[in-house]
Image (cartoon, rainbow, N blue to C red; front, side, top):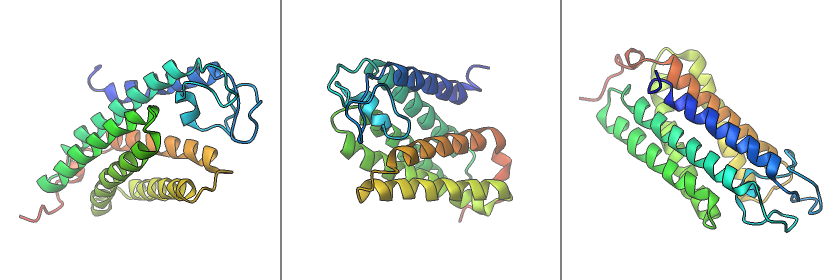
Length: 205
């Protein structure tokens, strides 16, 4: 039972730890360095990982946030590994398994001083994994999931666009929307798709 729901359990633990981290965050955001506590509209998730908060105080949220990111990364890595088993094409399955799962190792390192570099690497590898999954979802009869995959990719790319071009006003909110839609996609694909949904797709042999 635990193994069957390990991805869901890991995500729940991750969200709880990150939520606790927001409660311990001293304060300060990109628009108000003197703000008290965590501002969901103006604070980034990455603010929770810093040694010091934006207002200069020692960041008591750091321990909880790093734990949350580790659980989230491990859960997503396990998702890519498990989902790859549903794909009949061995080449694509390996890309989903190894590129997707490996990218999650870099995601865990977002909580380090290598934050910016890790975001670039992990985002690229994550999107490659999701892109390959999307291709097979589009070849299946899972019509609702096709829409969800596209929404996830569009939201993810939009957030990266805002990040890359420095549009910081809406970035904290978009970051959280991206987290939410990605978690929804992972859980939906994990629990509502079966190996049989993809077995009719030609492998190219």
